Each structure stands twice: as C-alpha cells, then as structure tokens.
Length: 200
Image 1 (cartoon, one colour):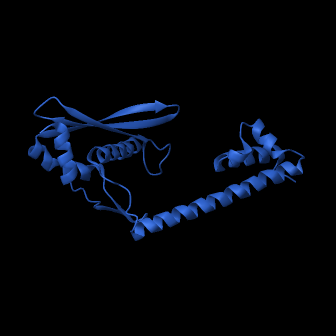
Image 2 (cartoon, rainbow, N blue to C red):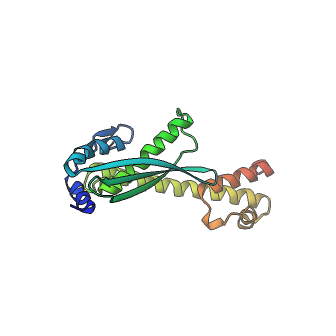
C-alpha cells in the first residue's frame, strides 16, 4: 500500500469519540491526546509513524503556534504533512505564560490532527446542542448590534453638545463611521469623554 492508501484506510477506520465534556458550554469535545490514542493501533497495522512539533511565529505583537503533524511511511520515505495555526491569548486569567503557550499548542495540534484524519469537530445540525449554540449565536449577535447602536448614539450626543460632526471626528481619529467596531466605538467615547468630561 502507498502512504496515501494507508492514510485513506486510517481515515475510514479511526474512531475518535468526543469523550470529554465542557460543563460550562455544555458540549462534548475531543482533544489532541484522544486523537493520538485513537491513532496508536494503526502504527503497527499499517507500519506508519507520527511526528508532531510546534513552531512559534510572531505577527506584530501577537504570537502564533504552528503545529506540524507528519505521517511517515516506515516502508518508504513518503510523508504526508498537515499544519494548523493557533494564536496565543494575550491574557488568560489563572494561567502563566507557559500554560497559555501549552494550551495554544494543544489547540493547534488538535486541529492539525483533525485535518489529517478528517475528523469533524462541528456539532451535528439536528442535535439540541447545535440548535442551542445557533440560538445563542443569534442572541449574541443581536445584543452586539444593540450595544453598537447605543455607543453610536452616545458619540452623536457628545458631538452634538459641542457642535461637532461625529463622522468627521471619527475620521480624524482614523475610524470610518459606518464600519466602526464595538471596541473602536468604545475607544472613541473614551477619547471624547476625556476631552469634554462626558458632555454637558
């Protein structure tokens, strides 16, 4: 068998159930360790091996971990490589820097392994879990739109009190009025309140 044929067979035969449960988000999931455990029986069966390593990449002030998964054919020099990137969180409460990097590495490795072995990590569309997640996403989106609207009105109010054009003021600060994110609106409000003391 070629390595591609071996990988195809592994993809069809591998069982890597979501055997972990997140009680906060109320969903089941698998991790990289579980996928590696599911792979082990195929090492002897198909005479293949797996090597995983991480590479650190910097983009501006953000740090990314690139997981590289290499499937090797022990009967030839053929290899198949899968990669995945994950960005380190700038701050995660209760974690030191090494723990943040470790968690990011695990996340990247999991998705590289998912890609190699064709493991689907999405929720089934007909499950209550999926419907609840979809509903929550819609609710979160509506809440965000509402917050953005309130922040726009706050900027308009402050500008009107001082005979300013909100679009022009935002533009002078490097923002495009109709495309500002919630964070940008918050920054703009903070800047105006600092200058004018929150309006009259």
